[in-house]
Every structure is written in C-alpha cells, then in structure tokens.
Length: 280
Length: 292
Image (cartoon, rainbow over all chains, first blue to last red; front, side):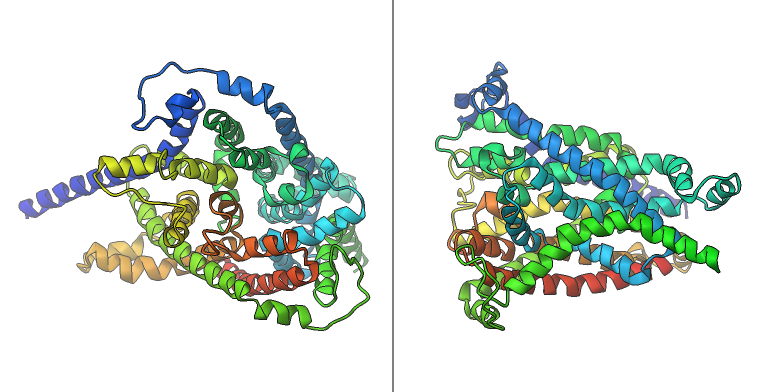
C-alpha cells in the first residue's frame, strides 16, 4: 500500500513537470515571435537581416524616428484612434439601451436574439461591397465618417450581445424601487442600471475599440491608402520595394502594444469578450 | 394591462436607435446586394433596370475559380478547426491541473487574440522569408533542408494554417478551459473509487459532459474560419496560383479587380447562406448549453 502511494506521488510529480515544460514551451512559441519583432524595431537594417542572427547590438531609435518623419505615421495613428473611439462611443449607449430592452421586455422575442447573433457572425466581405456602393453613392468615400459608420456594423451587434449578459446580472428590484421613488423609466436606466453595469460596459467598450483598431477589410475598401488606418499602412509598407524591416517592425509594435496594455487592463472580462459570449 | 403596454412601448422606444442603425448599415446594404445579384448592376452600369433572374448565380456556379475557392475554404476550415481543437484541448487539460503561475500562462494565451491579424501575418511573413527568415535559419541549424514556406503551391496552404493556429488556438483553449473548470467533481470521485483510470475518466465523463461547450467552440471557430481574409491578403494574396484563394479573398478579387458587382453579390450571398446555416446550429447549441 505504501509503495503504491509513493508511486502515485511520483507519478504526480512527473506529470507536473511535464505540464510545466509543455506550457512553458507553448508560451515561448507565442511570445518569441512578438519579442523578435520588437527586437527588429530597435535594429539597423543590416542587423535585422543578418543570418545567423546577431545577438548583441546597440539598440537604436532610428526606426521610430523614421516611421513618424518619413512615413507620416502620426496621421495614421490619429486616424485609427479617432475612428475606433468615435465608433465605440456611438455604439456603446445605443447598444446598452437595446440590450436593456431585450433583457427586460423581451422585445421581439427569440427571433431578435437570433438576429443579433446572426448579425454578429456576418462575414464582413458580404457587407463590405454594398457598403462601399452605399458610401460611394453618398459621396463619402475616404472620409472618417464613412469608416466610423461601417464599423458600427460589427460593433453594435457585438456590444448588444455582450451587454445583454451584463444587464441580466443586475437585479430588477432596484429599478422597481426607483420607479416607486418617482423616477421615470428612462431615468432608471441611465441613473440606476447603467452605473451598476459600468465595469462590464467599460470592458465591452474596450473590446469593441480593439475590434475597430484591428479591422482591415472595411478600411482597405472604403479609404484611400494615404487616409487610412494603421493596418492598411502596415500592409502597404510590406509591399513597398526594399521593405525597411526595422520601420515595419516599429509600426507593428505601435499596432500591437496598445492593445496588449488595454487587454491586460480588462483581464477579468477579456475571456467573455474574446469568446464572443460563448461563455456565461 | 396598460402598464404592460407602456412597458413594451418604452422597450421599443429605447430599441429604436439600434434598429435605425442596423437597418441603415446592415439590412439596407444586404438588400442592395440581394437585388444586385439578380440584375446586371456593375461599377460601369450602376442601374437595377435589367432583371436577369439567376444568371449571376449560374455564372458563379460555372466559374472553376469559385469551386476552387469553396474547396480551399472548406479544406482550410476543416484543418484549422480540427487542429486547433486537438491542440487547444490538450493545453486546456494541462491548464486545468493544479499548477502555479496559471495567471501568467493565461495572460500570455490572450496576447495573440488581441493582435491585429494583419500584424500577425506580417510578423510571420518576415519569419517565413526563404533566405532571410528565422524559420529557415532554425531548420538549417537543425541540419534540415530549407522550406519555401509561402512560395510553393503545396506548402503555402499549410503555412497559412500554421499562422492561423498560432493566433486562434487560444480561443479554443479559453472556451474549453472554462468548460473544464465548471465540470462537477462528483462523477470523477465516484469513478476513481470504482477504480476507473484517468484515461477512462476522460472518455466516459469529461467528453460527454463537455459536449455542449465543445459544439459551441467548434461552431464559432467554423464561422470565423469562413471569414478568413486578412491573413491570406498579407501572406499569399491567394497564391501561389490559387492554392490559398479562400472564398472571402475570391469575392474581394472578383469585385475590385473583376469589377463585376452583381456576380460578386451572388457569390457573397452563397457565402452568407452557408454561414447562416452554421449560425442556426450555433444558436441551438448555445440555447441548449444555457439550459443545461
């Protein structure tokens, strides 16, 4: 008996070791490419391209300088921020009211619930073509407004779906108490439910900002290259002749790092958002 | 009774801003494509006056590149979803053990998911460069022959799959891990008292109990797999030849290089129909999962 217990303990120790090794390996496979790209952004072209890799070098900031001075990156950076922020700020309150309505009054019933899910899952290529024609006929191609509006097409269904879950978690009794105290129905939503749901709303808003920031297809179709967002300038830099690896890496760092920081800030809600409401 | 009606009226009134936006930005454009798919609408002929029935659909069905795109996307979705599921389940099982630094592993996992697919594709494109990329350097250090990752018709498809797995496997891990964490412990205890091995426990307890979560995870990945565009745009542009010409890229190509709006609309409606079939299954699975 004692032997068996001991061997079981040894098995467990072995399994633990295997677990740590495999998970560390997995983490390295995820982290190394990102770290390697960050490294590129601090190297000269010569070091970036040298094979075998040079391990020790003096980091330079030239790539970042060039990115802003020669590529006008600030312009794209500002575009990305303006478009993502505006689209999110429009979508959040609108989606919150819709989510509240669905949850409390079952407006439209199950078919609406299905509709929200279906809209969220719509392939963007299906929408991008007619939205392009629509924007063209309105003569608003190459404007930030057009991009902001088109981003609502995925932002709004995503936010409604996410926020439905958060509204559900807020007890109805509080609103009923509010009504008895003489608040209007709308005041109950804005003054009682919304503040209580604020952390979830904030996290959902950040996720929708990330979705906009990373969006590629609409920006590709609706905007001229010079007026577009960061993903478009990344794609454009890549196809240029004699691509400047260091500068490209610096641009990639700018595209990626802010999102990592944001995602860590909302860690608690991140999984729910990233799995598109698949989880409760 | 009238109170109830007031409530409903209020419900619809606060819903109306969303409805207006959805009609303007989604429903109207979708109807536009639907109508266009039955006419000769085009960039050079932007009118709906010539109704031609199913001609555009017929043209699409006779296009061998359309069938290639369908073949490529189904093959792509099949392999990424299966491989991500197997790998993801493995990692989720590891993460479900009592280990230290779980939070750290967890944070690392979420990193690829918040990265722009364009950025991911660019990073890998640099690594997969045949002469200057780190991947071939690693191969040569291991005394293996270099691989033409993105330039060879046979290999490029698998390279795109590899990059997709790198970015998306975390989705599977997160969903499956959440499912594993919420499993009840009693069945496992009972089974171990009855002398079941952990492998038996996995196949006879874990898998059946996890089925609803697994179905939802697979279906969501199938739907998002069908969308794949950014990766292909950056990594291969559908090439070499048409070996990675996924359906979204095919439609994009046809629209903006072939300039045939009506035919592209027909093709996009076919994609839409396929996606919606999967969404119906997903909706059912999600409702079942919530009732359980």
